[in-house]
Image 1 (cartoon, one colour):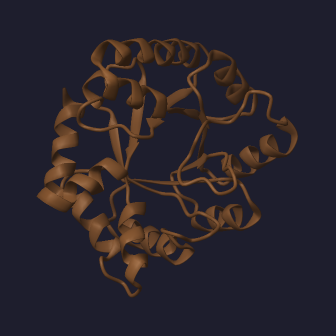
Image 2: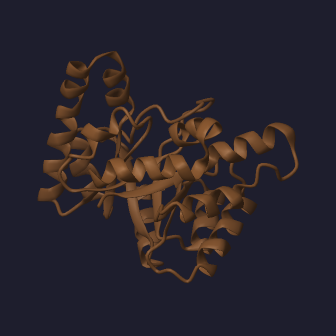
Length: 246
């Protein structure tokens, strides 16, 4: 089954809006695991507007205490020095390298295929040397897939924002927007790259997206936490797992 990795950033956003430790990010992680999620994702940004380095460490300790080798920890972020130092220290299951634009609210696009390879390739190799699986966040474009392979990545994460926007307009637009993802997944398979996906996936568009050949993991946060406000976090995680089971 496709792995669901729940992004708990939004819980930290709510906590930080008031200060203190409520709602607890760790309680959110526990609820996700109790509901059957097998992965947790965080994206510690430089401005610490949601997940903080302290959160990253505490979640790592909680997951390690579970004693379950099947649980995965995914840390997303741009490879700035403090992020790299944190990831090197934590040694999560997976590090997802994401380009960040100044002032962005959320990710806007994947790494451009013409990104300079020198420094980034070295950073990828350093992470892999620590036993960390490396995923690069890219647009669904075979050229970007080939670039990620040349960088030494183990996986790619396909940016699903435009696909989700198309699905929200009408089903036909959604199916058309899905086509580039199929081509990218086919290219990735030929290069022995694993395929992850994330950004604005939800209960409406996930039934189509879960059919992507070779899809290993979806990282979902905003939609899960938004619905959880009304029906509860464990309930929502269960709903998403049911969709992924088909």
